[in-house]
Length: 182
Image (cartoon, rainbow, N blue to C red; front, side):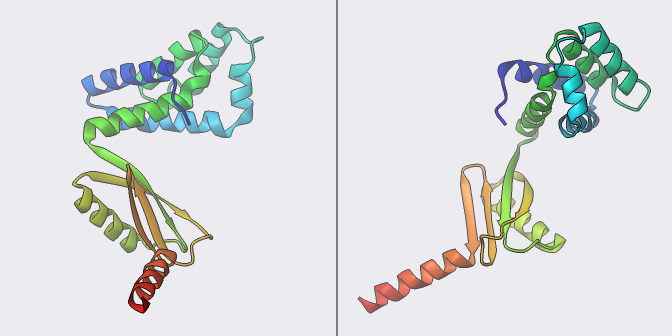
């Protein structure tokens, strides 16, 4: 998902407020929960995208849905402001931008691991440790099962690719055999 400048501005402002209160983890969790609900429920998206519904009605709906439900004040105020300004459709992008800015502040690099079979918790921990040690950064990986892989795993982190798939091992073996044959 591409993040536009409006979403980046809301995310920066929200992060600044969250840092003042040392609550950026809670703020991110709340923001992500609301953004997920927004993305998963077509009725919610349709309501907030409907031009026939006024900004005041949208603001009232946000307050009714979130006030007193444990959502942080910072997130509630940001979403209310976005509803007032007619920008609430950017909420998922704001959550993504907030996460990106938080990652930068905390020195976290994110990546994706594709594997033929789901990796055990121990294998995930070991892989994260090895990649983190190699790159010298904190790593957060997401895991996906890829039926195209014969076996092994491929991790893409930042600009790096760590390929420990069966296919790559077979290619290297084939190259070595061809070199020795010549």
